Amino acid sequence: MAETLLAVADLNAWYGESHVLHGMNFSVAQGEVVTLLGRNGVGKTSTMRALMGLIAKRRGSVRFAGTDTIALPANRIARLGLAYCPEERGIFASLTVAENMVLPPVVKPGGLSLAEVYDLFPRLSERASSQGTKLSGGEQQMLAIARILRTGATMLLLDEPTEGLAPVIVQHIGAIIRQLKARGFTILLVEQNFHFAATVADRHYVVEHGRVVDMIPNTELSANMEKLKGYLGV
Image 1 (tube, rainbow, N blue to C red):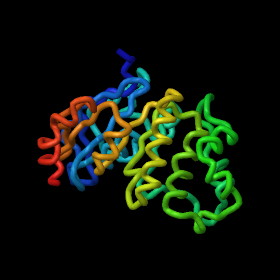
Image 2: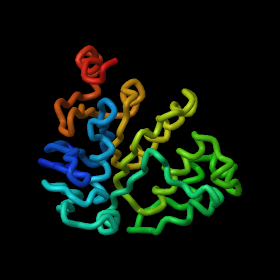
Image 3: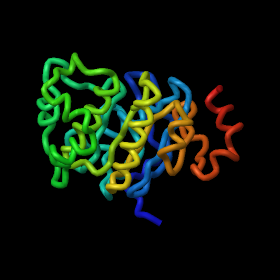
């Protein structure tokens, strides 16, 4: 069994007085791709934000690479090697692809070089001088993922990376995730498209009302499809 890289225990979080996470419990092993599945509004994105320290009020335990991060600010958490790619992508529209790529700071050794990133994302190499405003949705998503690979992060939090993308681009994002796994990256993925998740993930945690209610290994997904559809309301 691979070593546990991320262990989350009884994680609670609040936006002001609104209690959004109600005791999240899950773990991710080194080198795994794990998804958080669930309907809109159940707390998947809030979990990502809480892991990164982007929600001020949180309680519980989040251990990453042997360090309990629950009391650490976001910049300290990032320097441990945890990187977040939000659903809104957050690229700088007025900057070129190349400028976006070199902007994030290196938080620890081991990040990919520009050549390695362009090898993974040849389309970005072709569009290196294009402004963010000129990129398609798929190209923006590629850039958002590519940018954090240069920071030295060892675990990637990807929030809805396939949202709104054409099927051919979704397939390409899936291929990239599998390549990143092969390179040794650990990935926590928020997805509503469980058909896509099944092509990349080792395990799936189902989230309802701010807590994990089930865990389904990918090898047992077919046998649990009716139950999963019930969780997701499809």
